[in-house]
Every structure is written in C-alpha cells, then in structure tokens.
Amino acid sequence: MNLSYLFRVVLIPSAVFLSVIFGGAYGSGREIVAYISSNGPYGGLISIGTIFLFYSLVLFMCFEIARLFKTYDYSEFSKILLKRAWPLYEILIMIGLIITLAICASAAGAISYDHFGISAIIGGAILLAIIVTLNFFGRSVVEKSMMLGVGALGVAVFYLLLSSLSKFGADISGTFTAAENTMLGAVKSGLTYAQTSGGFIPILLYCAISLRSRKEVAAAAVIAAFISMLPAIALHLSFMANYREITEQTVPAYWMVEKATSPLFLNIYILIVFVMVAQTGVGLLHGVLERVDDFLKERRGRPLNSVGRGLVAAGAFLISLLFASMGLVDLIFRAFTFFSNAFLLVFFLPLFTYGIWLVWKNREPIDD
Image (cartoon, rainbow, N blue to C red; front, side, top):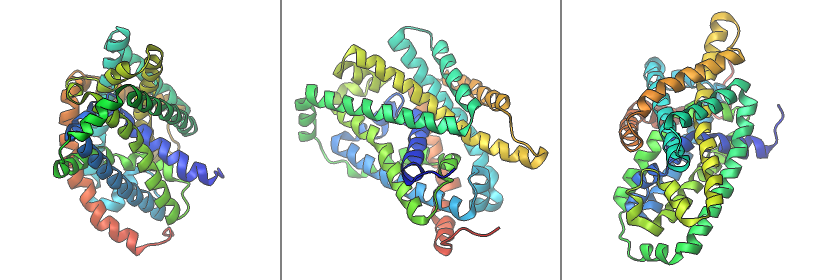
C-alpha cells in the first residue's frame, strides 16, 4: 500500500499509539490523578514532560530496530533484543494484556454504572462486542477506526479544557499560584507511569511497517509521543480546578466533565471514552493476533481466519473480567507498580544498552 507521508509518519503511528495506551492510561482519569496531578500543578507538568521524553525515546528505539531488522512481530522483536531470554517478555506481555484489558473493563463498568445506571457486566459486554467486531475485520479497519476515534477525542478534550478554563479559570490560576515545586517526585512518578505503558510498545510495531528511513522513524516517534500527551495535559489542567476533591473520585475524568460542561457534552464524551477504551483492547489484541498469525503461518502455512481472530479476542477479554472484579483503583495501583519494575528489568535495560548498540551499528535495514 503506497501511503502518503502524512498517513505513514503522522496519523497511523500516533493514532495506534494513543488508542493502545488510552484505556490503561486515560480511560478513567484515575491514572492521571495518581501519577501526574498528585504531584501538584507544576509537578504534574514536569511528570508530563518526563513521560513525553521517555515515550519519544522508546518509540524511536523500537520502531528503528523493527525497521532495521524488518520485524514487526513483538515476539521476533524480543528475540532480537533479548536473545535466549525472549520468553520472559512474552510471558510478561501475556500477563500485561490481561491486566490492561481488566483495567479497560473496570473503567467501562464504572462509567456504565455511574452514568447510565446499568450493570457493569452489561458495560463489559458492550466493550467485548466492540473489541471482537473490530478484530474480526482486521488491520485496515482497526487503523481507520483508531484514527477516527483519536480525532473525536482530540476535539472532546480540547472542548473540555476550554470549558474548564472558562468556568474555573480563577480556581486553576489560584492552584498554580499557591503550588510548591515537587520536581524529584514528579520525575519519579512520571517514569513509573511511562515505564508501565511504554513496555507494551513492541505490541504495536505493526503501525510502523511503512516507515522508510531513520528520519521518518524519529519524526513518527516524537509526534506520536506528543499527541499521546495532549489528553494528559488537558485533563491535568482541568483537574487543577478542583485539586483536593479530584483525588477522591473513582472516575475523575467523568466527574470533571460533568462539572465543567453540559449534560449533552457529557453524553458525547462518555461515548468517545467508551470507544477509546475499547480501542485499547483492540490495539493490544491486534498485536497479539499478528504474533499468533506468524506462528500459525510457520506451523500450518496459513494465519487465523476472521472467526478465529474474534474468538481469540473474546477469550482474552473474558479472562480479564476475572481481574476486573478487584476494583479500578486497586487494580491500577497494583498493575502500575508491578509492570513498572518488571518492564524495567526485562525490557528497558536491554533496550537502552544492547538496543542502542544495534541502532548505532546499523543505519539501513539488514539483508536476510
């Protein structure tokens, strides 16, 4: 497929990356409160800057290694980076997939119950239907749906920020004026946040398959990292209007939208968030399905059919519902703590040592 620079470098990598991290990072707003806004107004901005830099570097390294070795399957990628230790990353990713889907299911359930008064089980069922349907139709539909979802989200968070500034501008300004500098803690919590979600980047290497040069890889990495932080900036600034109260909310984003905007926009925002949470499951599962397809091609000469893709997606999501019963706040805290440390040892240390050497040594794709 002969895609333009705009699609290859800007739209597809950015849309896929934001869609994949959205459910585990922005779906409820709980994650923003815990790892960004809890550091205060200025500290939160420092956390956001830390996350942006970390994302940019990890995206560049992963995309470039994938381009050099022509491998867009996270399993093959981990074999290049980790050698014989590659099964450790595979195990970690499988656990992470289930936990992230559980966070998505918890967020969807909380939103369904709080806003519509319907059972969290029904909310989870709707989420499951979206995930299975999109994976059924394959990569092209997945990428197009992600671009549409990210576009709608961008409009929504921009409107939320404008409404918050208009309605609570004085409160936000006052919060910044009275703030204390918490730089060290802000950098630490920003790294914890970024390490957790950044560890899943190899799953979405399929979005970098059309990148043609190191310059395109660098541009795609920085743009995707920047766009992924725009919702964080908008939510963080909005949360500063109610800095003390926001920490007590289970679904802070929903609570803030309700206070700052109209009932009509609240309904629109809930719909967009619900779809974006589903997109996280879609994006992660699509990466896993690409891995399953490659495995089946080697073993039996053909990939999964559409029904098989849907069944695998449904099975993974149903397992995740068991973890979702832990509750959203507790689930997020435990998941972020565990995966931040696990990815640091299994993925980031090799990436920033051996991975840097691979990128420095090779400038152009390696011939088979």
